[in-house]
Length: 395
Ligand SMILES: CC(C)(COP(=O)(O)OP(=O)(O)OC[C@H]1O[C@@H](n2cnc3c(N)ncnc32)[C@H](O)[C@@H]1OP(=O)(O)O)[C@@H](O)C(=O)NCCC(=O)NCCS
Image (tube, rainbow, N blue to C red; front, top):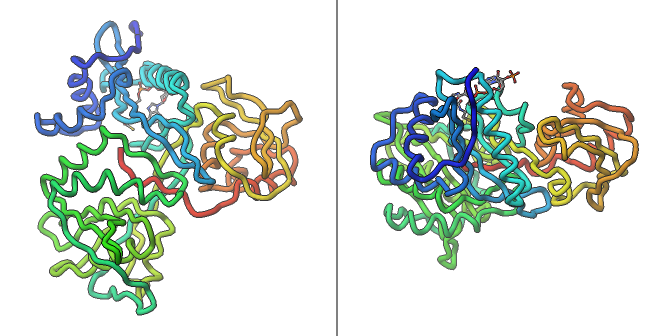
């Protein structure tokens, strides 16, 4: 089997780890320019290596971030990325070792949740991660897309230079949070990666309101030789800014299709158009996978709907300290010794946590065991589906 060890890497080991990661993901290796930006997301103390017989064979990193939860509180969060095991060293427990090390580290740092985007859906549930939000991809046929006259207008959209965009986006982004559950703080080390892409082929449009205050931006890019424009990042502090950015994109000459990626599932583009079928959903997929590192703290951080109190039993095999009963009521969450009415594991709780799924839906999959049927109805009221959570940040 071989000797395995997980430890924090030193800065001199980061590039080797990045090469390992890129090879495992079947990406070309980073050139010096790409490395100059991607190395900035590596925070000292947060880049891990897994060693097999003394040789680096796996890596994972996390960035210091935060996550907005239902009710609007922001909880400290570990943004996990750069996860890979060398193709000749898989299925020997290296990932498991790194996940354990990383979650213990997040707990020591006081991080209430960990979060990631998964390359494959089969990997992370065993470590207690659950799909907590979803995104949709859309394509809008520009020749048919006319905005209804009733859709509000206001302010002005302008294109900015790449240097201006690099300055402006990090300052503007936090203003666009709008209390949306799933929204994350983009770590300082994340932005250089965005700017590096910008320097190549992307353009940035910024919306300012009537008073001249910037309140949204869109990053877009022509797709190869085609007349499609891909929209990779569109955030806005209010509805008018979002609408005007879309209106701008749909007005660009020579474009036939505007494709929006990883958009909120409730973005009402169809309602803005006179011909709703000009906007086609091309896919809905999982967005943020969340792991409640400290279940008690995570449950206390969010708010609840109106319903009779429910006792949830959480079974957390990977982090057993979380296992126990939690009483959830409209006033909040507390640990308790009462008899459980519903039982679920950490991954199922994560799927409930941001309000993307109901307990009843998870129960149909056997992911919530129901000891008291009334409690399931109450849990649906306490963990209501509200505005769909959305992260929208690739990391
Ligand atoms: C995914 C990856 C990191 C797994 O690493 P690993 O060291 O082989 O994982 P482990 O040996 O710790 O496996 C733990 C368990 O997960 C399972 N597992 C691992 N990768 C899996 C996958 N891709 N799909 C389904 N199950 C998987 C293993 O079978 C094992 O199950 P078991 O506990 O029932 O035996 C590795 O295969 C890899 O680097 N893949 C390519 C890059 C990638 O996808 N990275 C993830 C980016 S989000």
